[in-house]
Length: 365
Image (tube, rainbow, N blue to C red; front, side, top):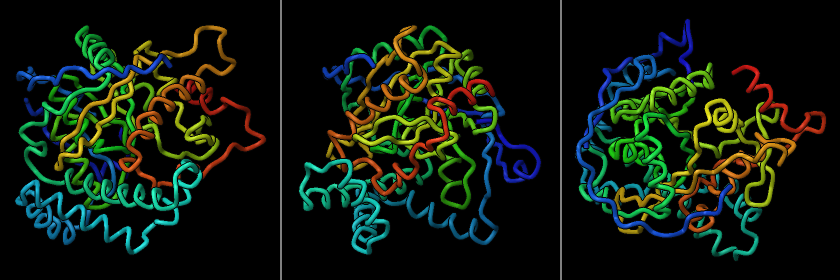
């Protein structure tokens, strides 16, 4: 979303524009394994979307972490995976946010036994560690066979590519699942220019991840002026790429079912879909169990908004349909989702009219 002015710009890093080469009923069929993509002519994001907004690390921390990033880059993929498993298991054993994860799982999956929920939670810790360690190296972060991991939802995948080929962007939604950072890298290499919706973040770790996002070819859209930036991106042929599974304060959110309980969710996707007419696709990167950063695509869409007169609150209904598609994927691979997040922290306020946040965001846009 649009970069902040004033003091925020003093924490910006502007990188050169470059790219690496290289609902409706769910669609369940598995497409043939895609061939490694031919090099495509890079399509650059607008220069102002290459600015990294946030609080960078101090000189000392920045200097020291350069050695950490170099060490992780030097490690083999197998060693990175072993390190991530160690760190994830350690964090789980130490109980860091474990109570939050177990409470979330007890609410979302009461049919599971306590032992099953503990294994899912442990897997979530390991997955989170893998996301961080896989996202930090410099250079090529994907394995040589990254394009040979398969696609589930072949018709939806072909529909997404066909729409992008018209020169208009689509709206792509994902979750904190699998490795969402490397998923964006994969989509760009398949010829889908994208701009990630992000928040200004602090520290060396977040700065490094943001640098790698821009380095692989993604633009960055910040909260201020987001709707206008999304509209402009779609017209340029870029596809906004957003995470739709983060809790927001009640006044800024719509509430939709997620694992049987209302969850506060940004209406930005639904508002953008209404304003642009762009189709919405849920795209998830599923770990295939082979180790390393090997992700299979799972795609569903286009997920249509309700027809005129079908819903009293079409923006909330569209958000609910997209959220349901994400939930279907998470239910199949629950250990790959971030159960450590307080997803259901906020609940509807009695005095707030349903859909008011969506209406306010639409009016601002």
